[in-house]
Structures are given as C-alpha cells and as structure tokens.
Amino acid sequence: MNPFDKLMASLDKRTEKRKLGDIGENIACDFLKKRGFEIIERNYSKKWGEIDIITKKLGLIHFIEVKSVTHARPLMPERSDGGRGTSDFRPEDNMHPWKLKRLSRAMQTYLLDRKLDGDWQLDLVTVKIDLENRNARVEIIENIII
Image 1 (cartoon, rainbow, N blue to C red):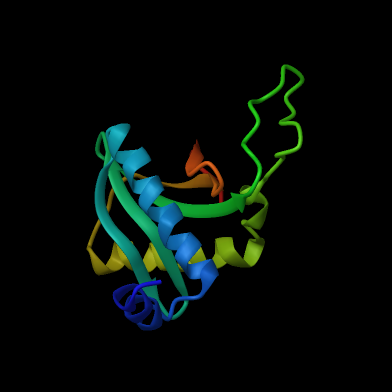
Image 2 (image 1 turned 120 degrees about the vertical axis):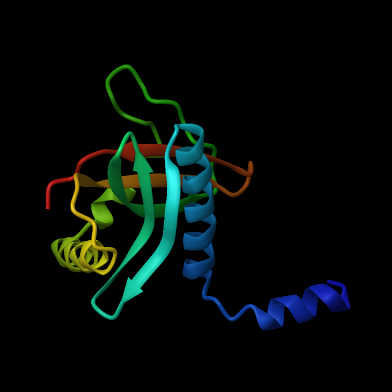
C-alpha cells in the first residue's frame, strides 16, 4: 500500500459494517434514480431514528430503508421453484419491529420538520453485494406497512 492510501485508510474511521452500508446506499441511490425517483435527502438523522434515503416520485414521498449484505460467491439466479440456490440472502429479515418503530418516529419528525402534508410510503431496498465479482443485485419492496 502506498503512503497516500495508508493515510486515507487511517483517516477513514468507519467500521466495516458502516462502509458496507455506505456502499449499499450509493448503489441504492443509483438504482432509484434510474427508475425515476428524485433523491431529496440522505441520512436524515435524529437521536430516535434515521432514514437512509428520502425520494419523490409522481408526487409521492418515499422513505427508503436500505439493507445491504455481502457474499463471496456469485449471486445465483432465481430458480423456477422460487429458491435461489446457495446464495439465499434475506436482508429484509433485518427489519425488526424496533427498527420499524424508530423509522416511524423519524418519518413523523421529518414530515413535521419540513411541514409536509401529503402521501408517503415506506420502501425497503435490498442490496446483495458480490465482492468477488464486484457486482450487486438490488431489489425494492414497496409500501411496507408499519
């Protein structure tokens, strides 16, 4: 590693989990933009919760939670029986009730802070990152009920 890379690595104090989360959020933003979403804000944070991405599409506000996982093996295509072979990841399983409660509080605060009174929904974007092949599979689960 050259001296510049060492210096930059020493300045980056983020945990590996946080680095993965940042990569996943960047991938999610690109995915959403390509599908016509306008990114309004990222990482809206209060002590009682954080919203990863806030977007707008067709007049509807979308609060986006991003869940990212890594996988060393190539991502397998979905089988006809609905399974995914050996790469069966479910980052959406990390949407625990306490996480939904924190998201709900943060969303309410955001709407009040911005004096917004319109339709909105909570969406989940899952990012499955294959580090070995440097690619990702992104999926969106829309309109999660809190």
